[in-house]
Image (cartoon, rainbow, N blue to C red; front, side, top):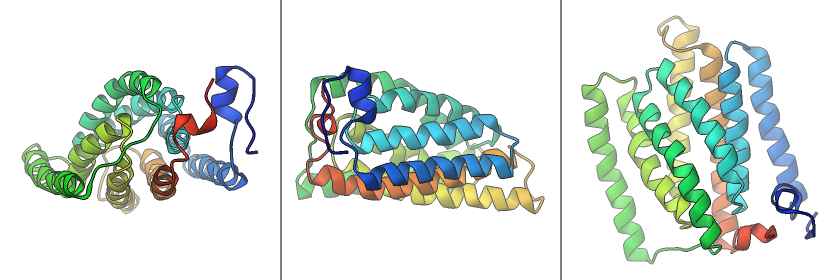
Length: 241
């Protein structure tokens, strides 16, 4: 499946230059979202968010501009899920994600190469993300959000990661790994609280869909960090027009 095609832009973006491993794992991750919905079918929006999120980040892993179309769908759906779950940090960052999708679409259309920082700048960015997390924790605690120490990671670290992502800096994936681990724990705690009756905010189906989504995104972020480091995501992963 490592062939180029003379078909149109949509076909090239969607179907060209896929490794068999990538096809298998994106299929498995989407199936995981569908299974979660079948088990607890009380949140169609949650399932849509999960499936669109998986597709978005997999195409993002390949450096393809089309990822922002699926990203817009995922962010709109996730904004609703975050609001009903009182995940105010997630809600705020999802508003930013919605706005960033057309910006990313434009920027990726004008610069096909990925970039990376030198060691000093990388340490500065990661240190700044840690400080921002502490500030976000304090603010979200003042707003009485759920699990503010975890939600803050999704709020402020995601903001930094998304900026690096739309600017095509490889370091975005390191931050996404941290965010996905924190989000997995966050939504898992909310799921358990809902099951045992200690939390009646949001819905069980929406929470479960986010648990499976974060697992999928974590796996993708780890794999994407390797793909971008090798330069395989340059020039839209070989799916140019």
